[in-house]
Structure formats: C-alpha cells, structure tokens
Image 1 (tube, rainbow, N blue to C red):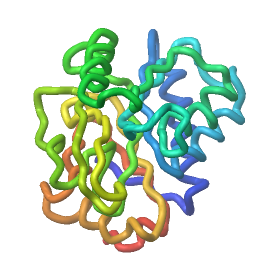
Image 2 (cartoon, rainbow, N blue to C red):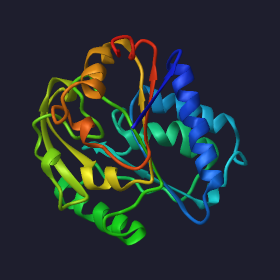
Image 3 (spheres, helix red, strand yellow):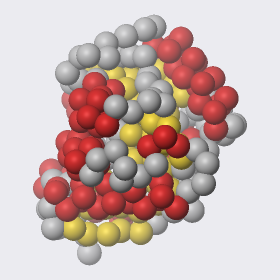
Image 4 (tube, rainbow, N blue to C red):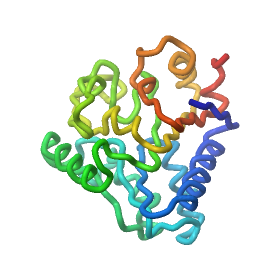
Length: 233
C-alpha cells in the first residue's frame, strides 16, 4: 500500500485520470476497469472526457462498476447515470457493463457475477479498480457491519445496508473483497476534511476495523488531498 498526497480535489482527480491513461496505454489486450461513484470520480471522468477519444485506446477498454444503488439507470443517485453523463456519452463509449439497480437486487447481483466471471475469470481479475472511502470507512458498498463485508465466496452480492451514510435502510449491489483484492491495480481517491479522522484510522490504526482496510493487493495506492490527509502522521 502506498499513499500519495495532492493539494486538493482537482489534483486528486487529475492524478486518477492520468493513472487511468498510463495504465491503459501500457496494457495489451482488453483493459477492464471498475468505476466508482461520488464527487472525486465525477471530476476524474470529466477530465478524461476533456482529453478526447484518442487519449487512450478506448476500443480496448471495458467499463465495469464497483457498486450501484438500487435505482433506475437514469436516477440522480445512480453511479451509472453519473458515469454516463460525464464519461460514457461525451466519448460515445461502448463496452459498458452496468449493474442493473432497477431489478430484483439478488437476481441482478447474480447476473452481474456471471457476466464478470465470463469476462475476467474466477475470481475475476480486473486491471484497474477505482474506489472511494466514506466517512464511516466504507468502500464500494461494503459498509461497516453489513453482511457483504464478510463474504468470501461470492463476487457480486446484494448487500442490505442500514447506515446514515446510505440514508438509512437500503440495499446496494457491490463487488466483494475477493474481487477488489484480485485486481491488478487499485486506486483509492479520497478528498475532503470530513474524511480526515477515519482516513488516519484506516491507514495508521488497528487493522480490521473498517471495510476499506480489507482491500489489499499487489498495487494498492491511496490518492488523498491535503484536507483528507491532515491527521496522518
């Protein structure tokens, strides 16, 4: 695990976009990326779109999602809707695999798992996974105390969540720990002073307290801005 610090949200987002470009250009064959939701990846998508369609080999890129809310694909809370508006539509991208949040969540998770395994094996090996971290230490839709945090057999699940961060009781579709840990490259994008306390606990405190601490692999890098990093030693 590595930590790289940047001045602000804009710099973190730009670093994420640059990493996407460099890793995709260096790859051979299909390059599979899992996107996340939130304000930081939104800005990263806008920067990628502004680079134009020839900045990286988009014809070899497959877009997947780390998690999704149980809402229709045009809903304001949909991670897919955000990616469609900021990245997919501006660049007219194909090869997009969305989680179908409008369907029965258990069936939608099972179908997404089958699709992912067919493309990337078992466990699925994604080339690049972008993750955020919530103020409660959750990542993807692996919330503290939720059933999916302990899942080690399934790769995609419908996770019942009860958290103020998720606005109460709901169900989220999410990739599980085995998929996140199997990825070739993982990039956490974390910005904002509201994350400072938990970020220090996640990165420097006892292990096993927060879901985001479970993501371990050969190349896990945290891109954090100064506001989020202010309590790191």
